[in-house]
Image: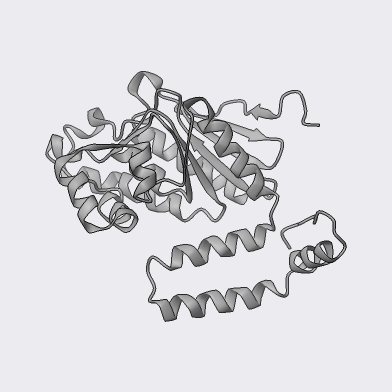
Length: 269
């Protein structure tokens, strides 16, 4: 039986996010600027990267959920931060590169999306490995409407997810799409009733946390490699990593447990 309070909120060290730990080896990060529609300010992004890096180095955490609230995942960048900023100031701040740092996290990231995921909010979701969307969610890249364009991965990750023509349509018109359309086009992993988006994401995270940590980490690396490598390069990378896992303790435990018809106890070794 799970404990009475399966999710423990950390005594906050952060101003813009809430950090929690689930009893089943899952880290949870909630964007927490409700008055600003969870806009991704420079301060929030710094805290988010710090929290993710801490979870990534914590052996007790095996998967991570990033979420907002029922109304909004994130409406995008903080325009107040950006409105008077010059190119040099933006480059020095390096906020766009923080999205790349998020994708370097080795543990599986699950985005739990409800309400709006727009601009940088959608780009943040796309740095994750699995996206669970509430059926009422709206997703889009509306930057064109304020005289700029996606800069935190939208032109690249959205195109890889949707293909050239749908990505062109969304980015050049700024139109939003529904969760069901996003699912049909391969932009999200699952769509669930509005009240279930977080519980479904947590369910997935707990399921992944039960798997062999080394295999999970390396499988993620191989999938991400497919975005950048040719098929032959990707297959070579996959083959090498499969052979590497054959020497792990988790491989021995997993196969022994299968033969003995019991649940394996993985240790990440």
